[in-house]
Image (cartoon, rainbow, N blue to C red):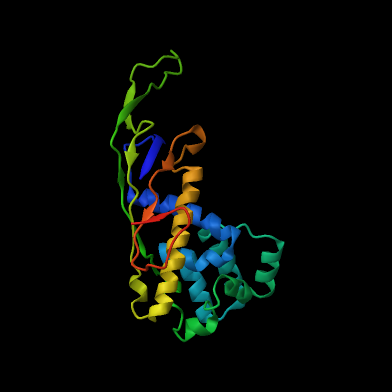
Amino acid sequence: MLKEHVFKVPMIRGSSWKGALAASARKLVRENKEYFPQFARIWGLGSCEYRQLIDSLKEDNREEIRKAAIYFALFELGLSLDKNDISVIKNDPLEFLKNLSQNLTITNVKNKTLFPFLQPHKGRAIFYPTFFDKVSYEIINPHDRKRRAGINPIYYEIVPEGARGKLQIIYIPHDAVLSESQILKDQVKEDISFLCRAIEKTEEEGIGAKIKLGWGRFELMDKKYFITDKDFSVEGWYKC
């Protein structure tokens, strides 16, 4: 459950949550590239940058792989490539891809043995909209440049400080139904933990276009999750 400070819209769409949490997840991947598989499974890989990367691996064109790897790293993952990354991609782009996932190779792409979550596909998470229990209004009064006065005030709905709503996400590993039981369990545990970290990071930074002005700030009040595995737990979160 969320305790809202100030939001500039009366609700948050599921697509907005998806985008905001993905941005936070990319920052976690930027800090540690080992999180890439979790990101790929939860949010999916369907961008044109990733499809171009897969196509370049199919053709086994090293120059095209270099370009595609750089575009994918910068524009899809939002990575900050340092000198070492640039050097690795320049000398051996396949090594850079292996650092993201050992399965992301030319052989696996050509033989169609690429893991399902590394193929272009939609993610495992479904993000629901958040509706709040309070709504208020703000006013914008655009001023005339000559008169320097406003005559047509615009009223719009906002979520006031103290309002509450629920963030609901359902995780369905639809692309892993043929995986071995233990492999699937391990993936679920990794993904749930990573998703919770992404939510906490979004709490720290806020959601929306004007977070620097104080909009889009929220506080996680009841951090709960449901999973059938009795031995699994997430630090700071409660199993329901």
